Image (cartoon, rainbow, N blue to C red; front, side):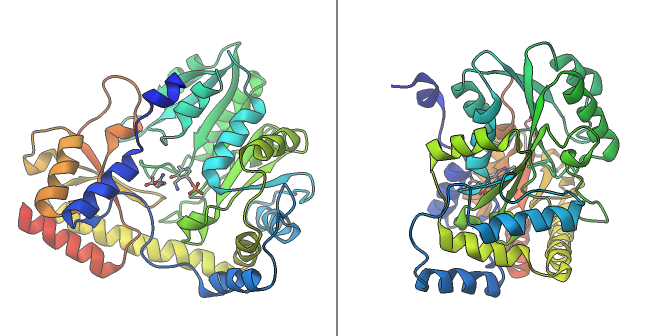
Length: 382
Ligand code: PMP
Ligand code: GLN
C-alpha cells in the first residue's frame, strides 16, 4: 500500500464532526453554513436535472459556467479571461488544488507552503514527489515573515501555494504582502497556486486582491474559486480555476485523470449564481460579518482572547484566559464533551514541530440562534 496515504490521518474536520454528532454538540468545527444558498441557484440545478442535463459535460466545464467565470473575473477584478482556453471547472476547490499542483510540479521540485495550511496541501505535494518548503505564520498577528519567505525560495522552487483569505487565520493578504510574493515568484520563474475560495467573504472594507492581478502574475497564477463558499452550497463541490492559456492545458489533463468532469446540472446552476447582482455578493459578506461580530463579542465576553478576522468563515480564539491548561486538541475535545460545542484545534493546520497549540477555530457561518445557543452552552460550562 502507499506509505504516504497510510501515514495520512482522517481529516480533522471529519473527526471533529463525528465527535460532535456523538456528543450532541453544536458543530462550530467543520466550516459549512447551516443555511442553504440562494433559491434561484438551487432551483436552476433542479431544473437542469429535469432538463436532461445528466450526461458527461465537456471536459473543462459547460460553456455557461466557463463564460460566467470569465465574466466574474472581469466584474470583480478587471481580469480579461478567455472562457474557452483559460477556465477549467473541477469537482470542488479540493480537486482544483490537486490539479494545479499536478499541472506544474515534477518530482524533486520545491513547493513553498505557508502554515497554517489547509489539510490537503502537504500530502498532495508529497504524493507528487515534490519537496515542501514550509513558512510559518503565527498567531496572534499572522504576519508574513518576509525574510523567511524569501529564504524558502531557491533554484529548485517551482511553485508557491497561497491561501487568501486564509483558513483558519481569517487573514486577508495586503497589496504590499502580495507584491512581495509576486516579486519572489517572478524572480524564481515559479508559479502560484492561489486558493481563493473565500474571495467573496471579506469584512470591514477589506477586499480580496487576487495575486493574478499584480504585474507579471497573469501567466504565473492559477486562481481557484469554490461555489461551495461563494453560494453557501458546500456539498455541491463545484470549483473553478482561472489560468493562462499556457497553463490551462496541463490543468485540464490533471482534471481528466482525477474526475474527468463535474456534474453538468450543478455547473449550470453555479453559472446562474455567478451572474447574480452585486447586492448578492455584498449581502453575503455583510451577513457573515454580523455573525462574526456576534460570535466574537460572545466569546470575548466569556474571556476568550479573540483574534481579528478579516475574511473566511472562522474566528480563532485563545482559550488560555479561561484557565484551561491542556493543549488545543484537548480543549476542543473537552468542550465537545462537556459544553457540547465543537471547535477545531488550530495546531491541526501546522505540520512542523512547535505549532501554536492554544487556539481554537470556531465557524460562525451559522444561524444567529445557533451561535447564541453555543455561547450559552460555553457560558454554562465555564
Ligand atoms: N481551500 C480551503 C482553504 C478551504 O477552507 C476549503 C474548504 N472548503 C477548500 C479549499 C475546499 O473547497 P471545496 O469544498 O470547494 O473543495
Ligand atoms: N473547508 C472546511 C473547513 O475548513 C471543511 C472542509 C472539509 O471538511 N474537508 O472547515
